[in-house]
Length: 361
Ligand SMILES: *Cc1c(COP(=O)(O)O)cnc(C)c1O
View 1 (tube, rainbow, N blue to C red):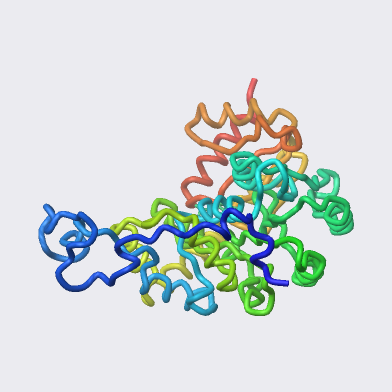
View 2: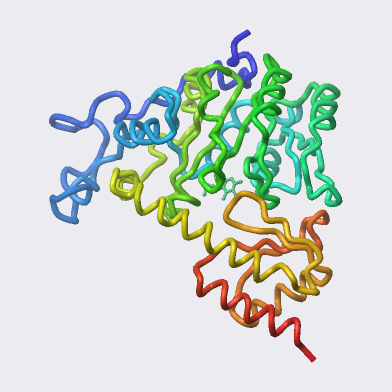
């Protein structure tokens, strides 16, 4: 059975939009896209080409990301951040009012938003706070078996905000369980912060696996809005039917190519090392505080704290210009705060705020 049979029939039947730039290369006398004949910004670099629509899937960027994640180029779709990948997957594979996604809260909020926007049901396999929010594989499988509507299973490794990872054995069992009936979407937004191998290596052998990567976190480029969907070409082709014709602006393409230059790898390794060091310091600041009952270290660039008066502590820190993440709308996380690993100075500012909170009145 081919993965395309899981897609919405309307998407399969649709004749995809064909943009001027996708029909003809960006060469010659270009009179096919109603563009202006020159740019107002001059004639050097991408600025001089600002009058032209960018490539729909910029070849060099696709090649760079394929190299970075070690997959074939036809297994890469470049997107406006992983957020766009999540949205495209949901629109292609979930029929409104009929299909469902499965997610495992507490987790990243965009899976639910994308599903609700599309009119898909949201099935939750909730993690247990008393088990440090570990995923219950058996409950996940039981839920899958009992609900035929599920088309997309969203997992996050390391998970946001709990920091735990999906073991590769479990992922393989899940892929097998979902074969011919659902896609497994593994969101690896934080993969570079942990030492485990990426599931990108499994894309070639598993038609129902999708891996999401991003330059937003470990490549220090959240402002770029550049992410990648990694999957077999059949899935990539389906997503290309619904993605905007020119998702990536020329300045973003130019900057993303710079971020992926070989000499950046060294800077990135240095960033990762310093974040690892700062995380140790952050854990020291958080541990041994009487007002913190649990510290979940996780394997990403943030930690999760349990504290009885989370909302008050959040605004106390904000009053001292230290902004943490609370979860007022998420009952499972009412007593928790997430703290990103910042610079050494950021962590000292947090430590000062914690000292003040501890010694108040
Ligand atoms: C931050 C984050 C993303 C966001 O990725 P963008 O590429 O910036 O859209 C995706 N998934 C998870 C789990 C995240 O925490």
